[in-house]
Structure formats: structure tokens, C-alpha cells
Length: 286
Image (cartoon, rainbow, N blue to C red; front, side):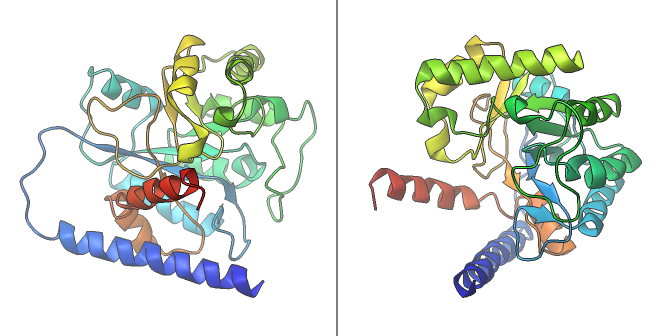
């Protein structure tokens, strides 16, 4: 427990330090870029758990969504896809909200807030783990493996939340044989479309580290009908970005609104260097 507490403090210090440094740099006048850049935020669960970076408090989430709505920073998945295709150039600094894993608190906690502020969010779900009926877990103390039901997802879809694929089960598609990865990608997409009657164009790699996707998985996703795929690598999306290795920015629990403002403005884009460095260390077996 002490080790977990230390890791929590060290990571928070590193994130805050990077955000402060980026804010100081952004205060220096620079030539404005000709083309827009967008950022995609990643959430997972919502509740009152402490020292859990994957769990964001409801009050914090509401403040964050209010900020995005008030500053007119929101873009939809279709906006992003048109941007990638070169058919649209939305305002610089636009934000797309995404939520991974399909935990019950997405419906019980996040959905009312998304509705109130009219947030065009995307929920990525592992279709093979969705409950057929009833509901798993609770918004107060849910387990990371708890999932919404198809009835829950129907409610999200009716509210305008886009449902995307997080594979068939929450396993790394790059760590499985390519034929199995193809099955995960195709089966998930087909199940969501059949059960919800919506078109699925977006995929989020489970875990999303550099070890969880590659050129082969990108080719498979394109082959079975996806238009884009998201990783957990930090950074902004710029014109002509590779559509099947898109970066995102993780929003963590236990951080203030100033930190959220910073990461929305690029304060954690440089964390991508850490993502790449860790990948090199892992690949080298150290």
C-alpha cells in the first residue's frame, strides 16, 4: 500500500510539473499554426474512489464538461473523421471526449452530465463483455471489470453518445495471433451494430500502449470496416495524422481544474515522449 501511495504521488508530481512547464512555454508568443490541432480526452470510470487514477469524481467531471461547453471547445467523432479526411478544419484546440471500458458509472454518473452539457462523447466498449440483461456493479464502488448491459448502451445511444469498439474482450489485439485480432475487431463491430442499430466506425485499442498496436493491427481494422483507431499515447491530432494510431490524453482522478485546463491546452502532449521511452525499455527487455 505504501508503494502504491508513493507511485501515486510521484506520477502526480510528474504530470503537474510537465503541465506547469508547458503552460510557461505557451505564455511565450509564437507564430500561430495555419492548421488546427485537436485533442481526444480519455476517461474510464466515475465515482468517489481515492488514489485511483482511472476514477474521476462526479463533481470534477461536471466542472470539466462545463468548461468545455462554456469555451465552445467540443467536437464530435464525425468532426474528427472529416478532419482526418481533409474535408473539415475545425477550430484549433477542439476536444473530443471518449470513455473506455463500458463500466456502469458511464451510465449512472457520466451520462446525466453529458446530457446536461450536450457533450458529443464516444463510449468504447468490449462487446463480448456486455451484460445481456440487468446491470453489473454500482457507481459507488464498481470493479474495473464491471460492464453495462445492452439496455444501458441503448440508453446512451438514444442520448446521442456514440458507441465504439474496444475489441471483443478487453485484451491486447497486438498480443494475439492476427486472425484472432481480426475476429475480435469484426465481431465487436458487428455485435454493436446489430444490437444498437448504429454504425461503428471507431476503435480504441485495449490498454493502448505501444505494445498493443502495430501496422498489422491497423491493417486489420481498416480491412474489417473501421475508419479510425485510438491509442493511449499522449499528444494532439494534426492534419494528415495516421488514422489508425491516433493519440489521446488521459484525464486522471485526483487533479484540479487548473490541471484539466492545462492538459486541454496541450500541457501533457509531451508525455508522449514518456510513452515512447517506456516502449523502448519494454522492447529491450529492461
